Amino acid sequence: MAFFRWLIVNSSKRQHIDDPVLTPREYMILRLSSPPLILNALYSLSTGCKLVDNRDSILNANEDTSHQNNFLGAAAASDILMRSNSNKPNCFQLMLGDCLSRQTTSKEFKKLCSAFQLAPSDKFSAPTFFRSHEKTE
Image (cartoon, one colour):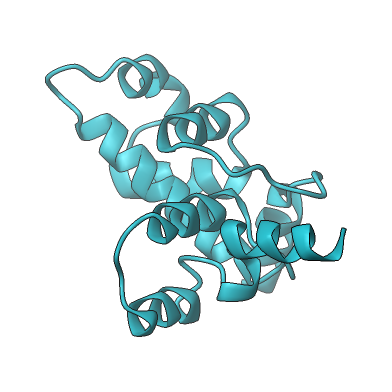
C-alpha cells in the first residue's frame, strides 16, 4: 500500500506556491481543468465512472446535479487528504475559510473545521491575514 501512497500523493501535489482564494464555482472549474490523480481515483471509486466521461455533465448541471455533487465531494476529499502533505492551506480550505469568515459562526465550530482540516486556522484565514499585513506596512 505504501507504494500506491507514494505514486498517488507525489503525482497529486500542486506545484503552486500560493493557492488563491476562490469562489465555489471557480474552485470547481480549477479542479476540473487539471484534476490530480487522487481526485480522478476518488471520483472513479465513488461513482464507478471516469471523470473525463462526465466533465460536461459536471460543468453544465441543470436539473440533475448529481454528477456535480459527486465531483465536488471527491474534490473536497482529495484536498482534505492532500492537506496532510503540506504546511499551508490549499484551495478548498481557503475557500471554506473565506465562506466561514463571512458567516456568523462560533469559534468552537471554526476550531472544529480547522481540526478536521476543512478550513484553515485563524492565523491563515484571509481577513485576519490581510489585516495583520496592513498593520506592518
